[in-house]
Image 1 (cartoon, rainbow, N blue to C red):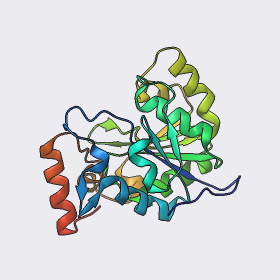
Image 2 (image 1 turned 30 degrees about the horizontal axis):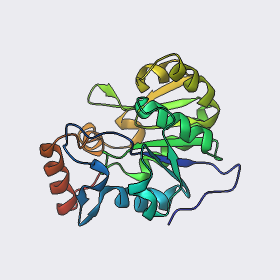
Image 3 (image 1 turned 180 degrees about the horizontal axis):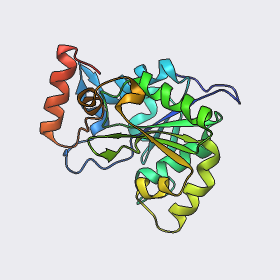
Image 4 (image 1 turned 120 degrees about the horizontal axis):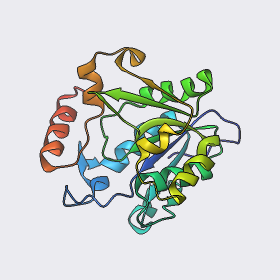
Amino acid sequence: MANREPAGSGRAACILAGGRSTRMGRDKAFLPIGGRPAIERLIERFGAAFPELFLSIRDPKPFRHLGVPLVVDPLPDGGPLAGLVACLEAARAPVVLAVAVDLPLAPPAFGVKLAAEVIRRDVEALLPRAGGRLHPLFAAYARAAGPKLSARLAAGERSVVRAAATLRHAVVGADFFAVDEPTLLRAFTNVNTPEDYAAVRTVWEIGDLP
């Protein structure tokens, strides 16, 4: 089980699990991956690398049994940006890794590297780019950036990419993670549809994790 780190520790992780899963048809957090719910897999994997761990959720009831601190989205229509803002406000660590619940293949080691690099580069956000697009829901954010993102949210912004663009940020690619582009793309496979889910299960079952 993950516990909160003491104030001043280096990194925290926030699993964003407040989406409505409309394209999937059921809650992506509880889709079985290797015989266990995806959310449990993420807690297990990221909790080992990020002792300060939160779940960002809309409704706490389905998640209370997991024994992880829950951060309720402050705006029901705020999307993942609202969840990210809430986690930045709740964190003690100076850097928070955002992890979307529909990224079950994302390696914790990638997140650790992102979090460390935010401090090293003295930026407010570090976003990976794979397949020609940014991945702001597996990215590291300085806790100090919370007020800026909160202001964007209050102004009606819902896009995490656009909100992150207002921060002092940097973008990294496959070279930063010391992998090739196909491996990075596999790590950022989103489970949005039943077809995506089938593909992720296949990767997990054959052990071809990034």
